[in-house]
Image (cartoon, rainbow, N blue to C red; front, side, top):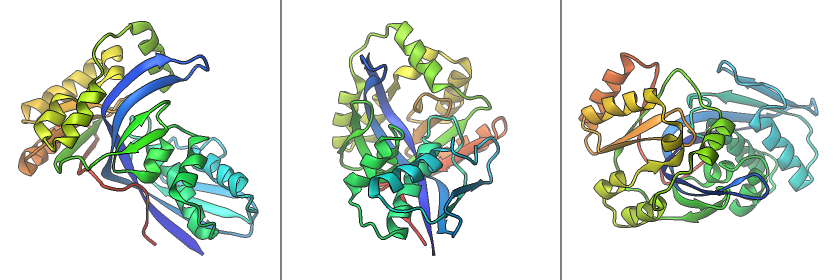
Length: 290
């Protein structure tokens, strides 16, 4: 038996890094949004009593270092289910090290798939509890939609859906280390009002113009990467309502209220960048499709 899951990427409509905690982690406040850029994860039972991983994307580890592997182990530990053997096949479309939660999406998909495959009937909050032990973005990737995230990013509050729009995503040919990004945050001494509170008000106002005026990412401010600014410049020249880096980078997204303008932006970006995508906001997270 096997289960296939469609696992969406995420963007951060806002991302405020509030403080460094005594345990070394950081408290954040952000609005996260699932988007229609997907990885496809298939989990099937074998009789090997081991966890096997196969992936068609370069540089993705197919061993115990993969988040999907760690999530499988966490699932079996949490449910006290014997692993009789599973094979995880990952078809990647979400770029890695982009701030789009591609690895977390794959891990979330594995948890959702195993819950169905082994008939454990865990509730959503239990699935999220398993995921939170492995990565801060995994609970969001399980539930998706539009969520206010706080604490280390694992405390989620459901919001109304983001207004419908077209979203252009561009990943330049370099990546950003999350550890380095947090280090730059710690030394940057950023000071500004919390934009996430304004973003929440904008989403509830159902006003896409307000939403795009509130988009801000502390990592983008701290890192000050010129290639990010170059991508944003192209997006804004193509009439994007707003553009922002996602997560700790290096992907950039732009919001459009006109599909033709978004498609024109995609076409122009593709003349320079390999990884360019057109997406829409989603109401859900990981979804079993087979």
